[in-house]
Figure 1 (tube, rainbow, N blue to C red):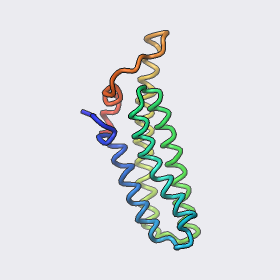
Figure 2: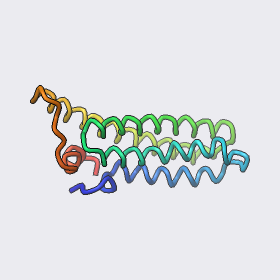
Figure 3: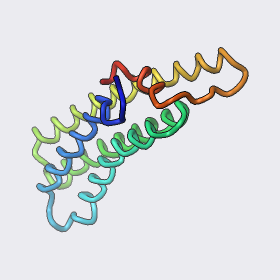
Length: 147
């Protein structure tokens, strides 16, 4: 059972990606501390942060919006990783691994988004009124496959 955003596999994977990105950033030149390195770190941190914030919201619609923001941050991160490889020669194997991790996380995010969208559509079909948010566990039920 999901009791917290920390129980979501998608959040756990996002956190691991953040750790890996921070390690990769250590290989970038010092003069990038406030440039590309900072951008990479901010984009990476944004992904699990938006998942956590969205999960803490009181409606599925809000959670869906934050999942979408996390997807945007993931695309931003992938772009910046490729740029770090092109400009600063981030090691090919490290870059390849981080991009593969990002791709897997992206699939998880799209699956979660699809699940949440289906829940909203079902709620909208069942009532002419906007869906009434249920307790925090309503998101857990939708996200069970992402544990």
